[in-house]
View: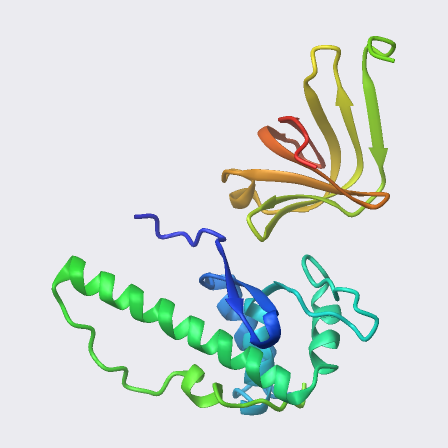
Length: 145
Length: 94
């Protein structure tokens, strides 16, 4: 099994027939980008209010969302600033739905990987000594970024 | 008019890229696509930035904007130079 992350895409359904295309898994570069996006201005700690936005920005590849004129707001291969701007203009409830869909996806993938590891090694993974940042920021729908 | 042109060359300035899945393997500038009389497509392009690891992965795709959409070709081989690359491409996908 390769230790490199293959850039597979996963489609996540949203309400009203919309969908997200997200990364199946983050690689090292992605996780560092996510952390970097969520840091406080002094760069010393993670800002919980920025975490949700950082998660969505890092995972999101594309979506079916349209503007008021019915045109798809294309975000695939767009600059991070453009994607961030689109996210900041969403309805807060819709952003919350997107964040929850991505958090659930990440949890599913992580659980599947832990299960595979257990099956391979026969060792049950130990509990983490500190809470994950997903747990810290997973329910956050606001952002100050 | 089949047979009139032995080769065809398409050129572009920017916004073209080689992708490995959703990951960008290379951002290209001043690119040219040439189709030989044998139907083989070759890409030559300047490199704005490239990820050497991703460029060695498969499958790679070449995409570039065109009026009303995108060119999209599968990449068969890539030869990477210091500031440019040459790639042989499969038939266009759309």
